[in-house]
Length: 470
Image (cartoon, rainbow, N blue to C red; front, side):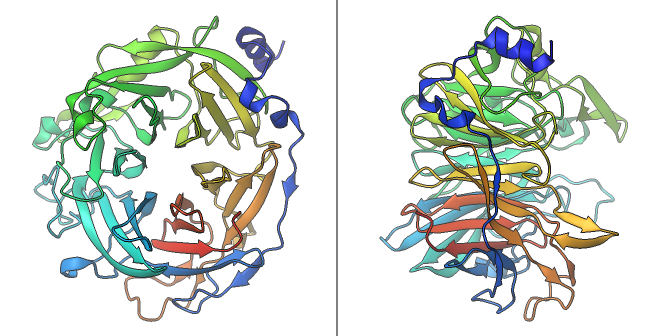
């Protein structure tokens, strides 16, 4: 029997009620008629979009923030919050940087250590905030600095952002602080800069918070040894800082099947699941590589994964984006499926049921979906991270913004068209080049669902896309 047949038999064949029938429909690429559309800010055709859609860019790498601090590069995960007025939106945005220098400004700093011979000046990862008022960019400011490889994260129901470090470093052994944690960044007020240790030391990708229970779900991006976790907080007051009081970390396990490999699945596969308690969320990983004479650089299986594995936890290939919508946690395994081109999961906490609602059959259809979001009306949007297509070394198609409908079919909503061989006028920090292979990241809808905010990671820019999203 094929491995996935065994898994389906062990997990049960019936689909959970919220997904019955719909996800069994054969998926097919529903190509929208895309065309180059001029950016309202620069006038350049940076994106290809369907008819009726338009956009503006802002928050480019190097653009000055409050206090004259340049916007850091490598824009990644992001969430949109209602601002202080009905027409205001506040974005909280990650920057996936390593030892590239502190972001600067008056943002709180977690770790300002840097090697004596490091001219960059410390850990460059962190978080920035952007205000859009009346559909127009207003300003931005640094919110957290001194973290590392801030990839994605997720919003909380009380108006804050959980930013995730996608790295494991025991830098405390060479004079710094340890990295591989989750931090809370409030929309208003000042971030504490304290890691939530009990959420685990591993290569974090994204989080999703269930507003009904306060439970936080977390993905791990660590190759074929990636777990799916949940965090049960000790303090259930659901306010900024409450998660720092700690809690219990658990890893997903398929009922009746120890150490199930859920990397090889098909659309519609469903599994009854349970949870394995992680007794030591801050345990060292399987390996620690040497840096400056000390075991510092995390490698192999993470400490939490090793404990979950010992308890029969399930393995995925590369956990990525994660989002809560209407009682369900949606998340992505970016290398899932037989083609290793990506799968989208839906976890129903009420039924303790996990369903593969979409599995890409090839990179032509969907190539390494990464971040995920849902609109207020339930539209699923995926950010592609597969590099697009190239022929004889020349880029022929950029990475895509994808949509999954209720029948498990994929559609194309946008394409990266950032061929900037002539640079960008007025933006000296942007080097000339072809960026069409750069990933989409941080997709998030405005609270009214009319605008999709999304990033292109390199050269680092944020877009506000409007049109008939409904």
